[in-house]
Length: 256
Image (cartoon, rainbow, N blue to C red; front, side):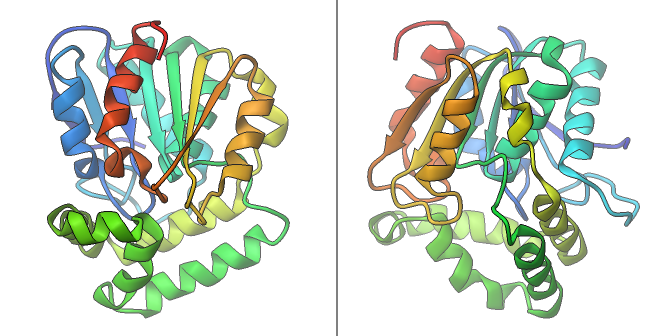
C-alpha cells in the first residue's frame, strides 16, 4: 500500500515511529511527537484510509497496516526504529515487531491487545456497522467516555475536543474496515516471536483493552515490562504526559 502519510517532527536521533488508535490519525500524537522530537526524528503515520493516507477501499488486516509501517521505515532509511503503538496502533506495532524484527529496536504497546476474545468477529462487525450508519458526531459520546477518564475530560476539555475533531474527520468506511481488521486479529501465538525490548502500558480504567489484555501481552513477550496506570482509560499516553519521560528512558535503555 503506497501513499501512507507521515508527519515528521525532529531531525536527529534514532527514529521513533508512532502508530495511532482506531478512527484517528497521526495528528493525535502531536503533543507526544513534540516532546520526543527534541531528541528523536519522529514519524507519525496515518493508517490507510485515515488522516491523509490513501486507501483503495479494499478490506485490509492489521498485518497489512504493519506492512505499511515497515515500508515507511524502509523508505525513510530509518530502521531499526523505536515504535510506539496505541490501541489499534499497538496491535499494528505488535504485528510489525513479529513480521519485521529487523526494523524494530525498542517497543511500547499502550492500551493494546493481541486478541479481542472469542466473540471478537461478531462484536467488531457490529461496531463496523455503527461506524457506517451513525453520523460521526453521534458517535462521540461513546468515544469520549471510552477514551478518557472522567477527571481528564473535566480538566482538559480542549484536548478531548482536539481528539474528537480528528475522529469526526475520519472516513467512516475506513473506520469500519479497520474495525473488521481488529475483529480478525489473533496474534497470541506470535508473542514469543517479539525480540524487541518491550514496555506494555495500560490504563487501570481502560475497558476497551483492559489490564487483563495487557497482562497477556506482557506475559507472552520475553522480558516485557508492564505498567498499569491509575486514573487513565484507553488513550493513556494522552492522559498521562508524565509517561513521556518514561517512554524516552525506555528508548534510551535507561531504568524508568
